[in-house]
Length: 110
Length: 362
Image 1 (cartoon, each protein chain N blue to C red):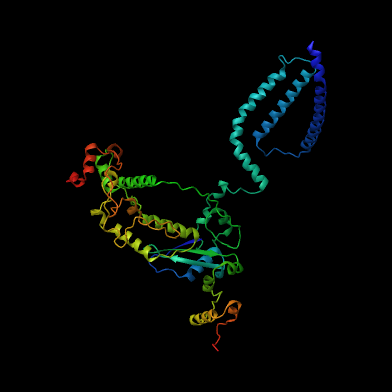
Image 2: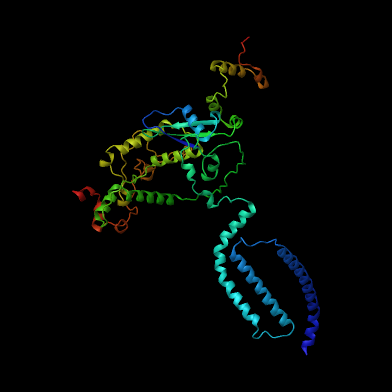
């Protein structure tokens, strides 16, 4: 659904507040509400965005994008360091074929 | 005589026809008997139905009865001259004919009712589904007691309440038929000229002239800018796309620059001293506005960009005949509109053609 938020005289409303309001309007819990894409275009007081409300948390986990789940702390991204990823890639370049999958992330050069 | 010969040849066919008739009559009587039994048992209650249809039923039955009476009389050798049944038949027939337009008018309602009775719910395109639900207009934030159920809003808004994306419907791609492109260079030129003419007609110069010489009262309107610029159309297109696809598109630097420039242009006093080009009407050569896009290289054509919106590179420039150094200047005999088409008095058009527009006003 498209969401219009009117907030004259205030700064943009944070997403947590919008979750709360939507939960009250539609009689649901907070975890199945996902909002995104808020832009405050107009000079003062109006923000437009999108939102989705799922029927159950399982559906939400299946269908929602990972970064939005992360905002509800339902998903944690793996935090491999960038340097290490590049090292792993360079090690993979030295190997051919299926042996690439055996090259681990934290391998030390022997 | 030929008659006995004819009779003899007709006899076998007559016998077979009579036999067929007998079989069919037996079948029909069996059906009619079962129907009467059902009706007498009360299987077809019609008190709450349409009385119009009931009247039609009764009339048709009476017609049938009179018709069978006549057939009986004729088959047993009597004449139909002045028979009472004929008069009754004629009367019933006229009434049925008068009922027919009524039938036409009721057809839609009857069909809808029958469909609803058969399927058990309203069909998809039924306008009754889109009636307004004032309960949806109440604010749902007020208090816990006054909140409505969500069940109401299932029918009302056809667009956009995306609750569950998990319901998977098979994606059917749109069937687009490719059309052969056979626009010649001459046609393209003509189209370009047409467009330039139309744009020139709606420019401020011509509009003011029209106002000056027309008898209509002066209208002062607080309407949209008559020149819907390409930038504003692009913006509208972008907004429509974003809201329908529920995504946010990123704005590139070029796009930002274009937008800023368009805003700046419209807000400054640019329109006081810079007039749009009306060379399409006067037949002269085009002049390009120097301040319009200083950073852009003026090419005759630009490659199509792969964007979600279809962007044409600076169409106003493209449509004008460019004075490219290698290209010779265009001839003056490009077809320009006559004065009558422009609805401007004759001597004015001459002045326009000569290009002494300023001297008209001074």
